[in-house]
Each structure stands twice: as structure tokens, then as C-alpha cells.
Amino acid sequence: QVQLVESGGGLVQPGGSLKLSCVASGFRLDFSNIGWFRQAPGKEREGVSCISSSDGSTAYADSVKGRFTISRDIAKNEVYLQMNSLKPEDTAVYYCATGCDHQTVAAGRLWYLDIWGQGTLVTVSS
Image 1: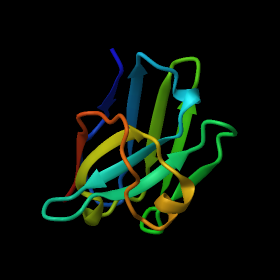
Image 2: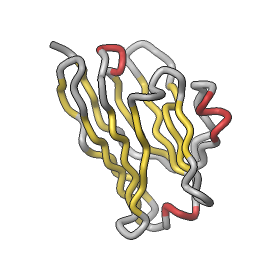
Image 3: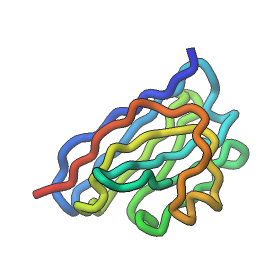
């Protein structure tokens, strides 16, 4: 069964950090670009970050650049999103998904989704 499962969300104070994980099953993460997108209440979905299957290069939306870091562990078939200096506006459900491209993510737009998970909620609040 092909699926992605996210975890690691929670409640964090402004300025804090969280690390999200995304585990793939049924396929290899290094065969596809993998990214994170988010959806805040009442807002459109936004592409956040993408990591390339070929060379591991990364891309970020301007809204998270310098604060978030995407990485992968090919042996574990997992992708991560390290989120630092969190802000209340980062509050959203975060999803991992295949098929991202750097240009679309850098523009903060959402790519055409292929496989995506059920999401994990991140709440940034004092």
C-alpha cells in the first residue's frame, strides 16, 4: 500500500521549534521529489518546502526561508521538516506529498499533488 504518514505536530510557543516526520511505505522516497505543504484555517494551501529526488537539493517558500529545513533519510525512507523560530502565522496542518518542484515551492504555491498524507497539526501560540 502506497502511503505517507506525518507525525510530530503539536503546540509550541512563539520562537520555539518542532520537527515533523513523514514516513513513506509502498515506494521509495528517493524515487520522487518530496515536499511539505500547509493549510491554515480559512486560507489556501501553501507549498512550504521541497527536496529533490536526484541530488537532494532543496527549495523553500519565502515565508519560511531561513527558519525551516527539509531533510531526508533514504535508509529509513523518511523526510523531515525542522521548524525553528516558529511564529503564530505558522499555525496550520502540515502535509508531506510527492511531486513537488522547486520553482513552484519557491513561489509559495502548491504543486500538483500525487500522494499525500493525512497531515499533522502545528499550533504556535502563547
